[in-house]
Amino acid sequence: MNGLKFILAGILFGVVMSKSEAISWFRIQEMFRFQSFHMYGIIGTAVVLGVLMVYAIKKYKLRDFEGNPITFTPKEMSVARYLIGGSVFGLGWALTGACPGPLFVNVGHGYWAFLLAILGALAGTFTYGVIKDRLPH
Amino acid sequence: MLEFLSQPWPWYTSGFVIALVMFVLLFFGKSFGFSSNLRIICAACGAGKKVKFFDFDWRAQTWNLLFLTGSVIGGYVASEYLSSGEAVQISQATIEDLSALGIAVPQGLQPAELFSLEAVFTLKGFLMLLLGGFAIGFGTRYAGGCTSGHAISGLSNLQLPSLIAVIGFFIGGLFTTWVILPLIF
Image (cartoon, rainbow over all chains, first blue to last red; front, side):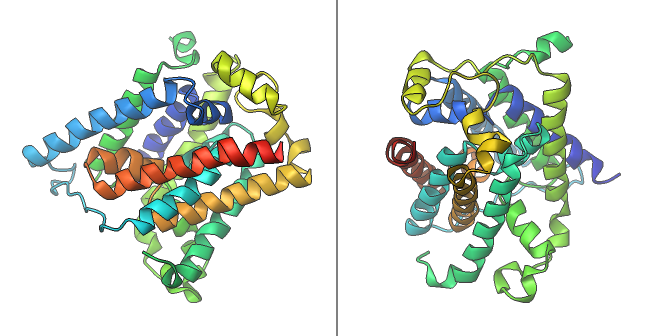
């Protein structure tokens, strides 16, 4: 039962990604062509609210449901890692029209083609794990 | 109510609900990052026996796999019960750009030219999905996060690394859109 809340949160995520059409290849193309405000509006709204939320959590030292402080682990500073890694991800994002979440949400819609992309994504993550020490970080 | 929910949601509703998902996960003591699941699945399949990167206590991250399971169910619920069946309303400019590439006006959520089973079993369609997926899996782990971990969670925490990663997402995305797609279509 402990896990049910995560399934419910996931369902909410799957529904919002679908109803916002953020899982659509068309919408991602429109975004990378700067031809509509739609995707920028979605991400922008989430980030603005997120900034306020994180600020409030830190300022008022809010705690989670078990009473533990909510903490944020800052990412280690680097340029190469985020710029190169991010660019490689971006290539795939525009090609498949999906980031990792939507890959799976699309399967829920019955777009079985995304299973192939998920297989590729697992192979990509595995390959990163194998050659990670030889890459600039 | 159901009819109301079945229309495409405006961007501000969607952005609000995504922030809500992030808040709910923080309240449950977790952080919102979807691509970690790819590493967790590799580890759960036993990749940790051969590769150190996957040798970690993935069972402690089971919550994220449950979240992933929920997101698949959420996709099913949306398509089965909350769909008006109407085509994605993209801008006229995008429709024209895409038709120049040979992709027809949207009939639904996804272009049949790319995601129908017929398309998957062509060499181009097969490679596009497999290599696109590969870039997603490789790139997100290299960058340490995807849209949820960097663009949403990371930017919300005003982290410079996440801003650099998001700039990277756009470098790659623009390259595919303006260079790779015209080459392969």
